[in-house]
Length: 166
Image 1 (cartoon, rainbow, N blue to C red):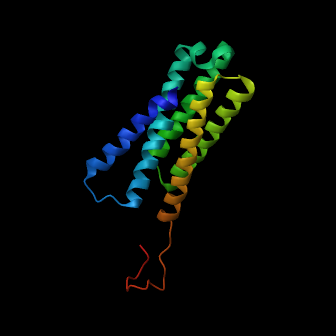
Image 2 (image 1 turned 90 degrees about the vertical axis):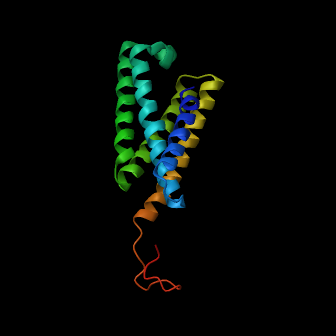
Image 3 (image 1 turned 120 degrees about the vertical axis):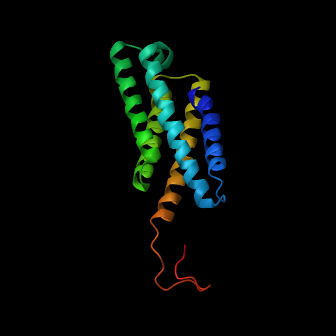
């Protein structure tokens, strides 16, 4: 139930970040803050927590697959995903898109492992499906963020007399 536990923290971090800067709330700013908070909390902090929990209590995280070798590999993978999440949080536009892609791939792999290999229960499967839904939302935000941040100005200008579209 790690996704359910960290989702309110991600929402609180995003709302605090929007409130803290006292700038006008625009669509671009909301996309940037939501993507940053999602990468920081749902990928960085959550997978760091899972890495520590896997190292400390492998049976609680991995269930029947909790051998020492599997626990070490899982903890290392969770730590790597956390590192990617922390780097993508403050990285460039390309790093954020890359972080969202890695998070989506990790959520899909977790879903496949939970349903096919380990035959997880209904609560764990629903938690993993929520993680996949959050990853899909972050991918959509990353795509919009990418198109907005890398947009080239229109050399012809706009119809209202402004020289560029943004």
